[in-house]
Length: 154
Image 1 (cartoon, rainbow, N blue to C red):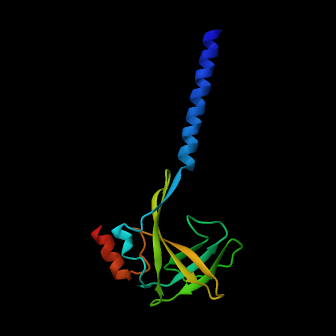
Image 2: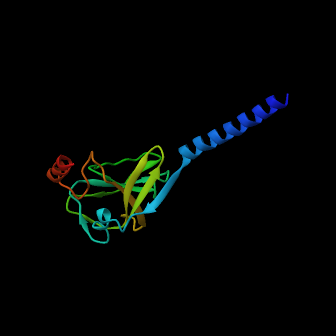
Image 3: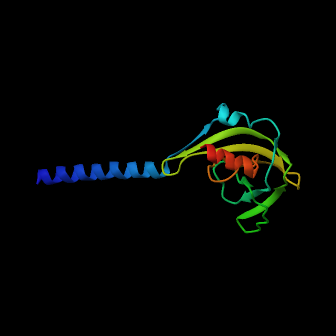
């Protein structure tokens, strides 16, 4: 009888440790400032000319860092309950980013964002995030030719 009780206790403790590990794996995330990284610092604190139509969107649910995100290669007018376009950028407009952040998650991996501030047409100053380091789409500061050259070199 004692052996069965000890075995049950060991199994329960093992199950608790296993479930704790699974929950940690699912919910683990970290946010790190990578503004000093040379890969990103060259885009910070200076006006960057936009080379593709882009849209600034508001999202009801906070994304990685902000409720606003800059979408490259998009000229949209979303007007949904939880997502809407709040500002459009044309080719030749300038934008300034003030920090770079890394988001790490066990099941997503590392993703990188540039964070900027801008004023909406209503006069409200907001902070927004821009996903960068994509191998599959051009950055807002790249022409299509520069993007094709970059992916060819990778």
